[in-house]
Structure formats: C-alpha cells, structure tokens
Image (cartoon, rainbow, N blue to C red):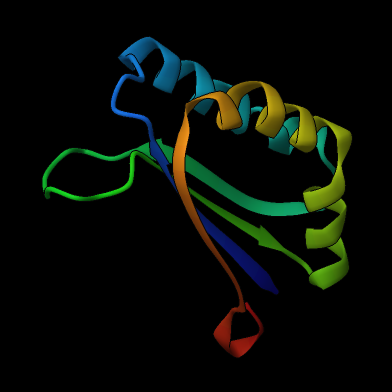
Length: 101
C-alpha cells in the first residue's frame, strides 16, 4: 500500500467559505477517481501556530493506483480551479505502509 500525505497552506486572505469549498471539492475525489482505498481531508483545528491550513491523507493499493489518482482529470481540475488560486505553500510525501497495510 502507498500512502500519499499532503499539506496545503493557503494564502492568509482565504476565507472560511473558500477553505470549506476546497475541502468539499477535494473530498469528492474518492467518488470520482478509481483506486482510492482510504481518504481523509480536513482543515487545521488552529491549536498550534504555524500549521498548514488543510491536510489530505490518501491510501492506494500500489504506486500505479496513486499515479492514476495523481494524473486523473478530476484531480487535476480540483488543483487548477480550487487549490492553486488559494495556495501559498504545499508539502507532500508518498510512503509505503508498514506490514503491507
């Protein structure tokens, strides 16, 4: 299994409504893109200063399934239309899950 973890730091001017819209759009991807085994998206709780605004954790059966997601037209559309206009910074990592999970 491959886990894909992304954090998005949005521009300071991003409104709560824009953040929620972004989360809804990202959260719809498991229904639109095949091969996703697990998916979670949410906004930071604001407990600690300096955190990213949004986090996404997605699990895939293998690297190929991740690449299908990465390149899928709906995923690309969400990035272009909803993420990039608000994005200040992005960090991501893909790793294997221990024990074959």
